[in-house]
Length: 413
Ligand SMILES: Cc1cc2nc3c(=O)[nH]c(=O)nc-3n(C[C@H](O)[C@H](O)[C@H](O)COP(=O)(O)OP(=O)(O)OC[C@H]3O[C@@H](n4cnc5c(N)ncnc54)[C@H](O)[C@@H]3O)c2cc1C
Image 1 (tube, helix red, strand yellow):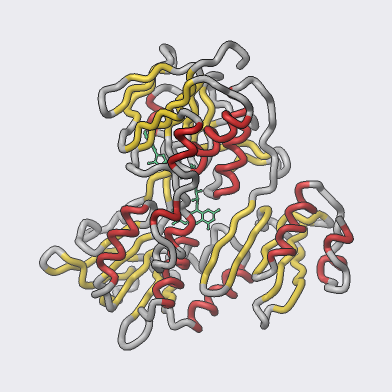
Image 2 (cartoon, rainbow, N blue to C red; image 1 turned 180 degrees about the vertical axis):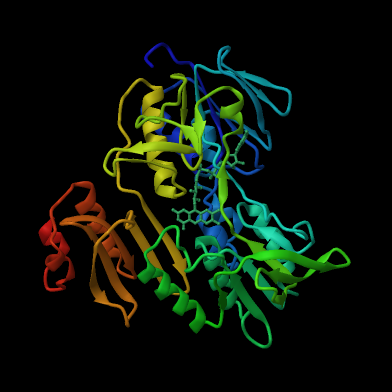
């Protein structure tokens, strides 16, 4: 990808799209940049949506990833509140919902994901919400004041963070209830080990959140168009005047698939974030990419992935080759507990605890054979930072060293 580049179009005004622009300008690219975003806002951070933005601790203005002045300074032409509707890869043309057509030399697809909707009767009732963008949280907040019985569907990160915020608002007190309904055997089962699931289940129970496992919501029942109850697969009916579903997303591959780019469970890219069309890169939640360190293809939903893959994508557009090869990491805040994870713990055969579980300050080091593959830290941010260095630099650490608090991790590094 080294021919002359005068026009770059970025589809998706989110975490990855914003980083692509930043990296292009930092690398000295001076040509045109168009940013097309379906939402009306400049790129903003999503993590606070289920944390301090939901609780009201931070206003919408503080969510922006960059101020307006950044886009002015870098001469980014913004097309906000506009959806890219069709991609003609052969003509290098992108059609927008406002009738405009943009030509590009290079295109970045940073289209993120779309929330999965509850596939049950009653899902259209008022009081049933999802949590992906600012508008979703604004709508939830409008219903929150009067809500006394809240049902959260899905005990993943978003469902549990939401439960923690609602418990903190007193929604588990004075006859009010917050119930999390989860089909799986344990909370956050897709992402964390049974030990971490167990820790968080207890934490929520201590804060009076009810967790109902191994049951699904089969119907949302309503009266006068508004939700009144949720029926579970066990036949049980629980009162609900507000329902928030956090049951996952599907990668937004619509534009890519329609234009004939290779897609599986995501837009297929190589380690340079290049799609099956060499003039088109993709980054963030919408991609499926190879990770040479883990020797597998991954589709990740994390800020770290969006930022780092976007840096690689920007470099590729300018003809550089910087492979994206890092251990994935992620965090979640629930109550006063910060969980930070690096690597993928599935498949480990030895787990070593460092720190004090009772004090809620510990890390779990996951080994496969004698190789460290992942570390989950609870309120031990220094462990997390060192673990990232250990894993990314493939530094040897033994289970004995990992568990011995008298050995500083930075000494090993
Ligand atoms: C509530 C919540 C909490 C989270 N918490 C954490 C956390 O604690 N830690 C963490 O690491 N990650 C967290 N995440 C995940 C993280 O925010 C995402 O992984 C990250 O935002 C992905 O960035 P992205 O640019 O790929 O997609 P997005 O930020 O979703 O941006 C994609 C954008 O593209 C737009 N778009 C799609 N198609 C088109 C089109 N055809 N035309 C125009 N625009 C289009 C979408 O409207 C969207 O605005 C959280 C996510 C949510 C929703």
